[in-house]
Each structure stands twice: as C-alpha cells, then as structure tokens.
Length: 120
Image (cartoon, rainbow, N blue to C red; front, top):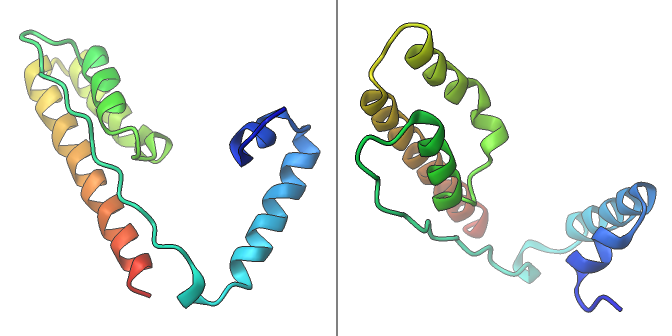
C-alpha cells in the first residue's frame, strides 16, 4: 500500500487524480495564509560542463541540474536556440552559453516566485 500522497496519486485513475487535485486546491484556497507551510526553494545540482558538449547534451545536463525549473515553459526558447545552431550555424559553444544563461534566468525567476509566495 502507498504511504505518501504522491504514491497514492500515481495509483489513481485519471478521473480520481483530477478529483484529488480539485480537493487539494479547494483545501489550499480555504486555508488562511498564516497557516500555510512555507515553500522550500530547491537548489540546482550543477554538473561540470564537458569540453565540446553538444547542444542536445547540454539541454539534458541543464534539465537535470535545474530539475525544479518548468522545462515546458522554456520549450520555445530552447527550440529557438537549437534552430540557431542547426539552421543558422551558430557555434554549439555559444548556444550552450545561451542555454546556461536561460536556465539560470529561469531558476532566478523560480526563486523569486517562491520568495514572493512565502512573504504573502
């Protein structure tokens, strides 16, 4: 038997998952702000950038390092950087630099968002 909410959630049908999600959102919306537990800020787990790293491998490395950042929201930007490399011939090292800057920016936005929610 599952012993935490995440395990229980994954075992439920899609319909029951939606019901549980709606109930959790209801509880959250009806909990006074002073009773909410503060959100914790996840720290990145950076890894060393290999020499001559490909753009694809850089995206994988950065996605693992910045696991807390919503990659779906970065899809357009990462695709544009990939296109600049493949179609326009921008050197991989420059694209990887841009990717690292993008992930760092999104991490700072994530931290700012958590800090703002915790100060409400």
